[in-house]
Length: 306
Image 1 (cartoon, rainbow, N blue to C red):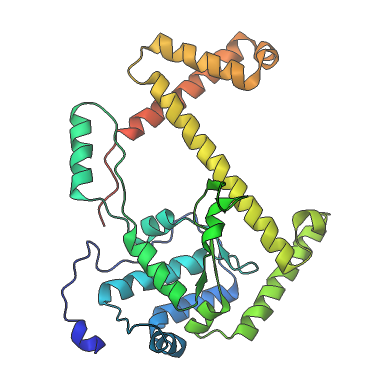
Image 2: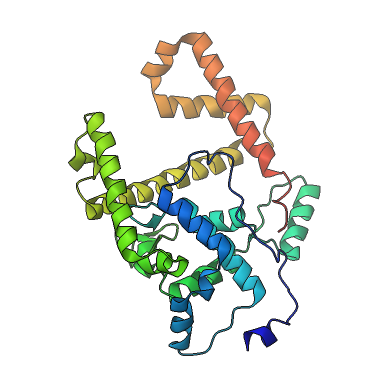
């Protein structure tokens, strides 16, 4: 049946997405992850026996068209590159996955708004669609390869908490779909934890403080770190946006006055006096340059369409 339905023409803007590994990823992943990446290149997780069985036991017979299959293959490589082998958590947002795999798209209406704003000398950030990623990961969740409960999207409270980037983790089923047995996965997880414990002891670190006493403790420790980093990143983005509103369409002297008030509030008068006139002037120029660079980058063209 699949072979007949595959005759449908592709409607995707990028019919052949691939995970583009950034140059900053110089460090080699653990041996098990390297092996999983090779297995992912040889076959899709959708063709595994466990996947076929899961589809047969589902409420409806679901077919994966070539566009969805290609997206899931790229997503699989991205998840493997970002998974923590000890915790099995994938600490990366859906938007970042879409950008790295070439699955983020901008509609024609949004591109028209960008062009209109550019003509008027204004800044407009287009809304980026990541539907192919969300649907692809949803399919993997249905196969049992990803665990992503809804309550993980909030901090402290599921009803009145703050929404954060989607958190999810891989399951042993995900690796089993690639041909890695749960026993072998558990063995490598324990070996990786032992390696991290050895490194911590060599630096005279307390394992309890580092959260390295056990896999469960390390998982809780890293998840908490991830949530804090998300809020720190959001705080920086909001601060940059506020600064942009203050210095946009203002003269040089007004911009310098804003930066001075910001530094006094951030550092305090005692630190400002300790710097001296020359040190303060240099810091003002640095901060002002950062703000101007941010405003200029806001008016640049949107990302290349995939």
